[in-house]
Length: 101
Image (cartoon, rainbow, N blue to C red; front, side):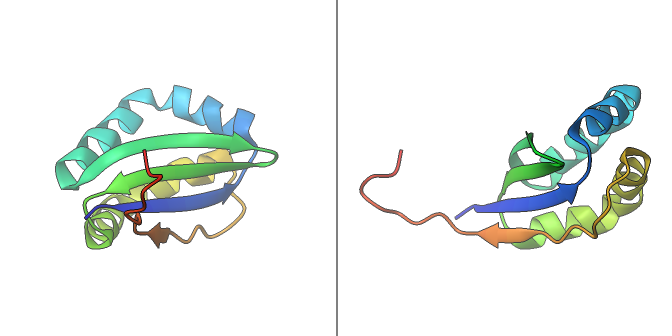
């Protein structure tokens, strides 16, 4: 069963989007690599003073291996954007409940 992964970034969402736009080729390369390593879905979401990464992966181990391999590139982007915290991934397993859709 797949897992959901969340990662909160203390960063200005506007600055974050500027860095993503300035590094579009690198971001696409990292995205393609994540898919080959087990990523199923990926998105960024903005809140007040933060951005959240919301992913679905085939397993937590797949994400952790990908992040270890791509950490320097991802870290560079986060540094350019001005991320203030040390992001820690959190994993959840979906529950098979009757109201799930």
